[in-house]
Length: 77
Image 1: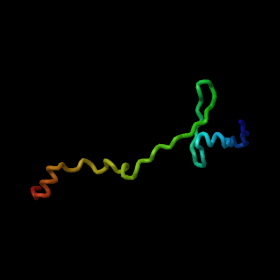
Image 2 (image 1 turned 60 degrees about the horizontal axis):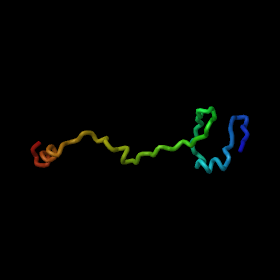
Image 3 (image 1 turned 60 degrees about the vertical axis):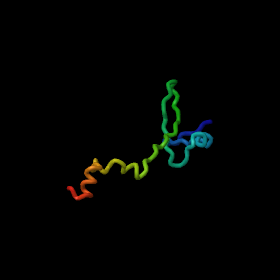
Image 4 (image 1 turned 120 degrees about the vertical axis):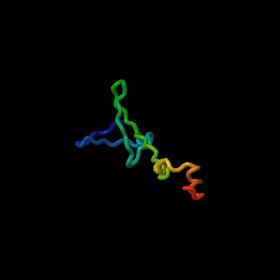
């Protein structure tokens, strides 16, 4: 299967290849050089975005110990 390079250096990826790699609009692809010199088209997998809760985890600081909290509730501090 072959394709033609435009004057801007663009090519159309054949539908069979897009379907095989799961490439659609907005997909990121990479070109990698194989050890034998060939250039291979690879779909770039998106990294999983952390949830909004995971992004906030650990941002509250050290905080108070249980003994300190109990002392505050008893009015000892």
